[in-house]
Image (cartoon, rainbow, N blue to C red; front, top):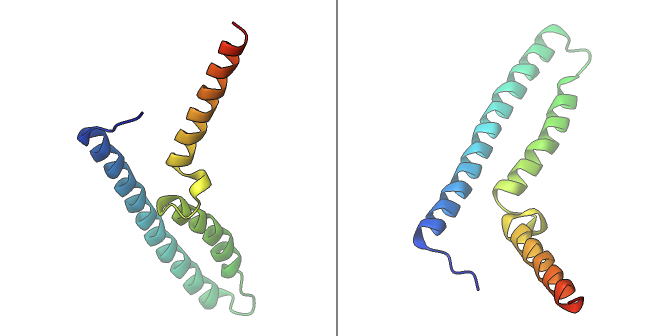
Length: 100
């Protein structure tokens, strides 16, 4: 049985807040950079729009960063990792008991 102390809960919450904060910083950099690229593209070569390649490819990465920060993909989250670790430990214990 795993009982978290208040300090451990605080540390987990602090880490989650840091991940969300990192995502928002990433989003800010994305918006500023893509905005600059749009300006440069439209000013110097409006006949060929190339900025969207960067926006789409970087946007895909930003989407996955958001998914991790807001836990949209539970099978990639920390809880999933802990459950899998516990599952492997239990399987190992069963194997060692079986062969004793």
